Length: 145
Image (tube, rainbow, N blue to C red; front, side, top):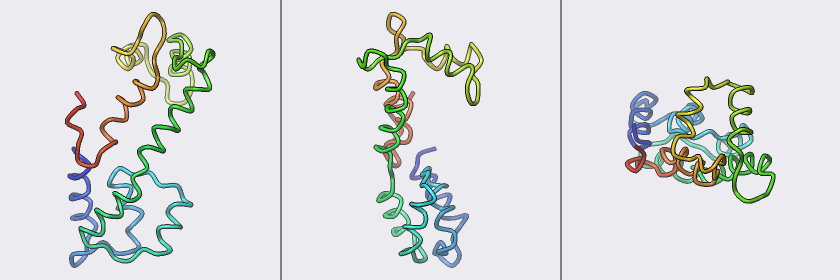
């Protein structure tokens, strides 16, 4: 489902009399695929009002931090980029993905890196861009297969 569809669906669920009440703005932002920090929510709520659909779309567009998210993920990869050449070893990435946080099973890991492995390394800039592609343009995820 595209972000535009998510926004329309969220608007329909959250609206009362054609507007999203101010108190529901944080929920509405998250429903549109955004993940604002608590600090960002406080900043938004300081000036927020009830939102009709055009105002909701404008707010989501204004606070769509996709570039910040992509950069944060790439920065996390750089921690493991021993040669600072834009790559991480498949072995290191495998260890991270199968032993930390929500652990991937071997088959899931192989599916994840399929098409990104190059001689035992992953070029993480390309990997991150492709993985975040569904979230990088409101309403446009047609290029993701």
